[in-house]
Amino acid sequence: MVREDGDTWDQATGVGITATFSAVARAVATQKGLINDPFAEPLVRAAGIEYFSRLIEDQQYATDGGDNPMVSGMINVLAVHGRFLDDFLSSAAQSGIRQVVNLGAGLDTRAFRLWWPSGTTVYELDQPRVVDFRDHVLRGLGAKLTTNRCVVGVDLRDDWFSALQRVGFDPTERAVWVAENLFVGYLPPDAQDRLLRQVSSASVAGSWFAADHLPWTPAQLQEGHAFFDGWRRGGLDIDLAKITYAAEFRSVSEYLAAHGWLTTDRTLVDLRTAIGLGRRGVTSHDLSVTPRYVTAALAAGGDGNGSSGNR
Image (tube, rainbow, N blue to C red; front, side):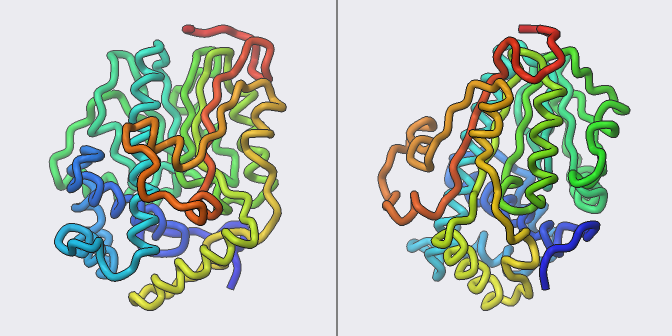
């Protein structure tokens, strides 16, 4: 089975399972003091995937991090990137940006757990069933928003930008865009390029961007198949071909740079260093198979609409 245009998912099927796994990583990182996300573990348990609930318990109680080093390693990678993005978004807010667009928000809870300056709006875009599930669970937990939030239930392969504008996004003002765990094959190459092109055209000088990205080299493909084999052994009927598009992807960093963004491309070591963890425990193999991480700011004269917005 391979990905098909128009396929859908929720928190426990298809691509949606990876959003739940990201919540597993945040739950474990919260236990370890790296992230503060009190909603992550309840979201995982509400998703009803027993294997993921066991992973949280394994990471919490097993001194060796559980019985699957590959899964433990991926949990750590996702947690480090999540913490890095928390800090990145805080810096964007401190710079005066008041529009935050989360592309493929999944089970993200930053609108409930981070501090935001007055006047900030967080826009969250993802499949309707995923965001509906998350918000239902958060209401049950009594979670309180820390900023204004607009949820857009939309497929990012469709006309997501029109939907974003309908709920109030202003393309004449600066924005910070985040695509966490999205540019790793979950969109077909043409849709990924189209999304990046639309982000560029909808941004003014001084807007920010952050994402992880994978070109899917042979080594990364081999690692990906091995990783999901571990999931199947844990009882999940899913493989890499069911959730990613098998295709050649353009470099996200190079695409952004060609459209006027000033980019910085980072490795896992760079991310760990940025949040004070350093290189310890990261091998050359880890660097060859994990994503790269791009942050960017749109320069004056880039592909935006030319308005400077709030700098």
